[in-house]
Length: 142
Image (cartoon, rainbow, N blue to C red; front, side, top):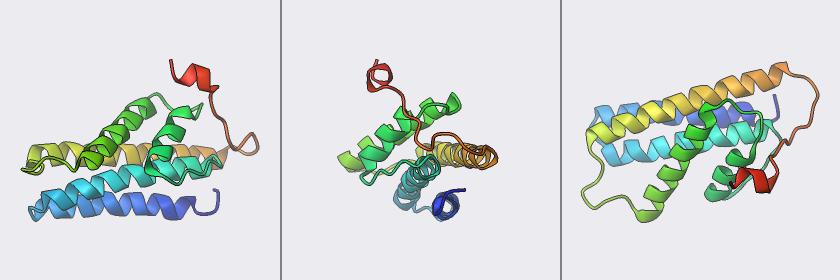
């Protein structure tokens, strides 16, 4: 495992747990925010494990899309992260999220984090190889 990956993945797991806790207490805005950070940290853990560094939130999303060799469900994970980025940039809606939305986001964040943990565990088992495996830019933007 690459230095820092375990710590980043732990942040993702903690964010999912915090989102659940906030939802249970009725703090839906805080729960939604934790879902966003759970997905962001999960993506960063995968990127870190592949030797890819991305600082800005949008860079994380783009870099995740460009990684080759990820399970098919990562396309959905990248879309979920993009949707969360857009919602965050727009400031959400004035009424705030409803509980059913937040529950769906928690489920997505938990699935994303679990998928990231599997990829990281699989990367640890595979010795050698290129740390940064990106698709050709022309192929990834079709």
